[in-house]
Amino acid sequence: MDPLHAAVRPALAVDAEADLPDGARDVVVVGGGIVGLAVAWRAACAGLTVTVLDPSPGDGATHAAAGMLAPVTEADFGEDDALTLHLAAARAWPGFAVDLERATGTDVGLRTAGTLTVAYDTDDLALLRRVLALHAAHGLDSQELTLADARRREPHLGQRVAGAAWAPHEHAVDPRATHAALLGALAVRGAAAPGAGHRLGPGSAVVRARATHLALDAAGRVTGVHDDAGRLHRAGAVVLAAGWESGALASGVPGVVVPVRPVKGQTLRLDAGPDLALEHVVRGVVQGRPVYVVPRDPVPDGQGHGYAGHREIVIGATTEENPDDRRATAGGVFALLRDARALLPGIDEAAIVDVTPRARPATPDNLPLIGATHVPGLHVAAGHGRNGVLLAPLTAEAVVAGLTGEPLAADAAAALAAAHPDRFTDAPVRPARAVGALAAPGAIGTPVTPGAVGAEPRAMG
Image (tube, rainbow, N blue to C red; front, side, top):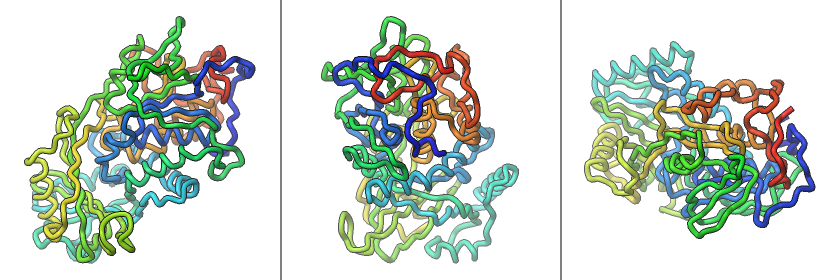
């Protein structure tokens, strides 16, 4: 049984008659980007009442993201745990997209056309072949193409390229459309959850306010969040999904370390006419510099944005160890255009409509922090780096499983083990509970029972 589409059956009994503090929710999610909203929506589908706190939902890394779902072409040397996690996340995306589109009637722009990787010169081709050898060692589906085959797949490739490779099973999605759909799904009151007979949590809401610090009770349990308007949002559990700002919020909780830092990146959005009909994500290495070009589906009738037959193309992305100053740099924009047009010269004719600098939330080991911490009531969904869009559905599954006490599938639990949020603390790290596993007394991640906020926490039995 899919725990996200089943009625909530928490693994422990709590006092259902407990009085609820005014305004209390089962869960407060701090952060309204794609990760936070995915957690909130899946929690609402599980019957929990949810508040999302964010002064400007979706205006962080989600707003800049290109939306590549690319576990193969993002694979890197020495990052086997990240690869395992990303592969599991990619498997979660098709079902997530179907559920969200059914719930809202909104197309999230999922494209399954594969990824073409192009090497600009012979040194770039040598690097590409090293990466292909890494793929082969892990049994990943990618292969080198002749230049003739590459041009048949993508006729817009420039004349000066040295080689290419093909990853047929990689996808892409529109992060802004997905975020809008998640906002719409949370705005629905009493709508049936997709594929199930239960209802969305009745109190789901997005509050446009900034979280300032977490509330703790005398025993050290996290019991809510204070915002910049002086309000206390009481909750049975708090999920930190505030991107690179999550670390500062966690610092007020003794014994919790969330080492997330901002890593700035810039993306460009272009409006391309029918003459630049890219069909695949094109990734490239141009004299050692990575670049990617992500096409969206064309606008069929000119409604919404652009003109009929036009499509959005996203170019990215720079990586800078700099704060989130929201300032685009001339050098960053120039570098992206220079390298993208070296591979796809037709980009010269496209109009630049958006330059988006934002900071991604990065961690010291390039792995996110996902799940319940050793502090009762505190869960984390942060530090997703370049792969927040890819990881959002799997992160939501994991966090909601920790909130409700439902087990994760064995492969998902194994993939998430390296992303445990307590790995930077002195607290013992407990693995995610897989299907069929038994919870030990006092296990981390005491479930939240819908409507029982404020009840005395008890160990899982």
